[in-house]
Length: 249
Image (cartoon, rainbow, N blue to C red; front, side, top):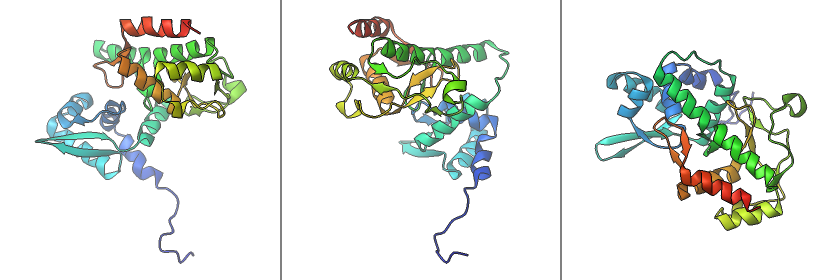
């Protein structure tokens, strides 16, 4: 046995997994997965519980290190503790069976998330897949066709993609720099990060470049947040702007 006082055993996965295992807490975490901080009252609405009950669930999430809390005046705002928590949520979403849609509210939420949502701070859903296809079509990104073919790449819906070696081209780096993306993320020598989109079963751009492109879309008002947590919408100016941007290639 090691005499090292800081030696530790295997990760206690069950301890943290138990926090995800309650449907109400899972809805709280999903509501926070777009990076915003929300008050307990709003999280109670998302979880479908009373204000008194939500405090118990938030205490569990705090104790497990999944969320943090900050006070602003009389209010306490909660947010995900790390980006890794969102990664776990996205992976679980890829593995989880789909629940039946039994209400208009559930249908509206599911439709909004499929149309467009944030994932690790980058754009996902149909909007994210379409954007990635546009970047491939212009030749700004090379290395694949954006399709999810697990029999070829080995990529799974429950994990970040690694089987396809996408790269930003010189033309892509120049074009995106001119569009306002920080030069620090415009690396042409390294493979790009991508995700296998669990609703579309296709690839969307991820990693630092994906986050920077999404930030730029928000800054320009080309995408805006929907009332549904994590969901985003492409605005009219966004549709014309993206079309004009990629048409210039």
